[in-house]
Length: 485
View 1 (cartoon, helix red, strand yellow):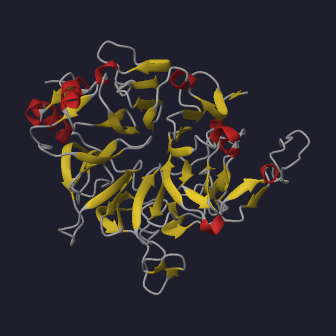
View 2 (spheres, helix red, strand yellow):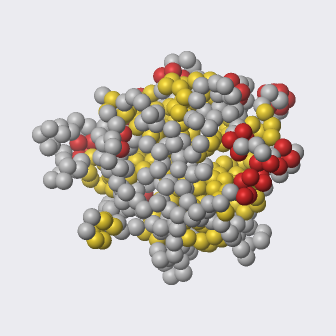
View 3 (cartoon, helix red, strand yellow):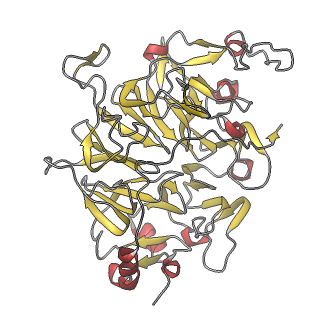
């Protein structure tokens, strides 16, 4: 029989256009740097999921090693519910309903499902998330009691983040690296040689945003050697932003153990304000963009995006990879920080991807995975770089499985990619198909249909998986990359 590895897609491939997803247009795709499962949502609000399911993360009501083909997802008791968003972590998934509620399934070791039950290690069916402000008798004074409407979700290894229609941030899950954004890890001793952390089992609004003391007084450089701007524990001293409670976010993205968010456009008086970028959580490899390898426990302003060059080219969106971050600006420039390649140095501060900017490329979609990074432009050019053993870089069969610099994904030449999502060992694309030019470009892209995968499906169904009972036990990383100055 065929080996399952023969079914690896080494170049971008259209999935089931005449079978499972016939006549369906995909509006949203969800994958993450630690996920081996994915979710796609159609333009009519139907959700489909596939991939690993050993912890019930696909919410199908049962566990299995893998769900080889897309299956329709639903919420029990909500037959007519449609979906507007989704997110996937390593062992869990979140669906965002058109009714403004979020639903989660899968592993819950750190409370990342946000269902207000820290003792439950996981659920196999989607369950409504507990969001502060949606609970009877509680309220957010800016949104009104019971009127918090969730519109966006993101998930990391053991962390989940939501954004409401008012642009407010809510998080649940692990606090080991400060990724909850509540100002602490809550570290405590469980037993000799074992630490615990004050994880959060429900979604609570995080309304405190900070900047470093040096940035607050004009961006004076912190002198680490003399201890200037550093507290007794070695952490950078920060102060709360005066408008913390009024900050509204446009998007949020979870990496493995860090989070990045971009502020929504706003005005100060009659002038447009430059949207700010915030990052927090694990600071390994400089992925937070603050110039040092240090964890941040509260959403902290990335000061590098406050310079005059961003006055007319402000940040618009951001994505987090396992240990890196990408930020896209209004004019289609991309800035990178952190590290996603096995070799080389870490980039400690936001650095322009000049291979694209200097050649006139206007980037419209960005993605970051476990060890991969993607950028797609408005002229139908897609590039990727990093390391991908399973074809996730998209270069094709018998082509290189790694690249140290941005390299063209030739199989998507002239295809207008409108959305990217990078997972563990795989990459998802939404490609526009609105006119004759789009159709012409798509004719060159490979296709796979359900009836071509019979042997593969049978092998996958026979595969036995072992549940991790809610996910990995968190553990501090020790190895850090060499900084790029």
